[in-house]
Length: 429
Image (cartoon, rainbow, N blue to C red; front, top):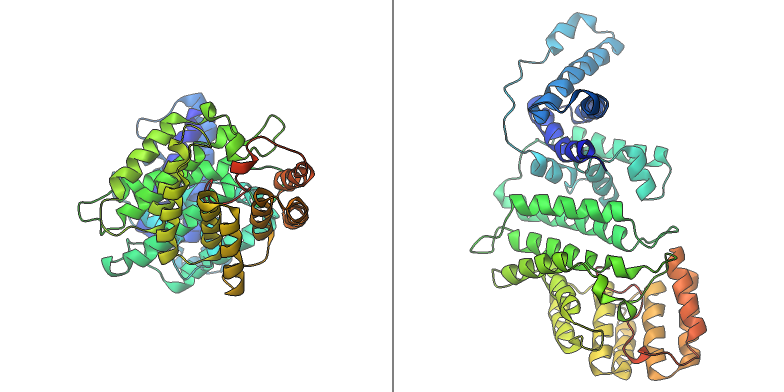
């Protein structure tokens, strides 16, 4: 990516935010900003970057917005009122960054989660509709309709372009964090397609989380939401730090216990560890902070055998008190099995199934296969590895599970401490 592209991607949400704040018309403003970005990408490499690129983009986008609104008027055969659409004189460009307001607007609870994600990537992340469609493996037309519906919902709801009031900021922040978490998770462990990861998505989620952390930092009382923002950013950094060792030379999945830990990014680990160390003592502890703490325990272990599974089990005990979802429950099972043995894990899994707290699917079969393998039930392990492979939609994960089923009958080093594939004990899930 060139320097101009980096600059434009960073400025895009600020310019869009400035236009929406001044003029409204979110849908039309977004088109105007895209055209201004295109003009910059064409002109700046040849003519040089202007002294104030943000102001340049706002000016060009404002002029284009004027043209678009006038054109819209013409289509509606109301030429006699065109003059009234002339935009008021734009105030001087300020240094205020509206990115956070824009991010909150895109993640408004009135939108569906799919709409929140698509609109966030398009409006705040600066991705084109085609790029967002490729990221989620859907046709461009489908993604265009999804984004259009989201923008229409915002327009019809009359949502003001303003930071949420303090009274409902917690709820809005929760939606923002959830969307960023989903974007990162899909980027780190793609649920479908030929690639194990989509670094464009995980990288964009980290960039947006950094932006959010810069705007909502930790405070002394820990009651502004900054603790969970720091926790989510730390979780992303500590997980992404292992990415260089997670894929083999042919794109195959390398489980954590077999990874070359010298390839892990120590700078990201240091940054993530510092973040979560600062966040945990302040205010109430949230789920992202606890998951980041689990990731830190993994990253700080010099070898797989040295992993402090007892501490991870204790962290999952705390996590299940605030998040009793099936994914967390399965990860808790794995932690228990690694800390106390596979039979303890299998017993806990049976209890969860009886209580209806886990759902049948690829992840459940993969965890059961792993525990059966560690318990010495090779036939049962093979059966469940193959069933997990049948249900998996990611091609690299399918190949890994089939390979695991083929290997289960033969002795393998480190099997006693092997992690099951694609569980949150190695990252977010």
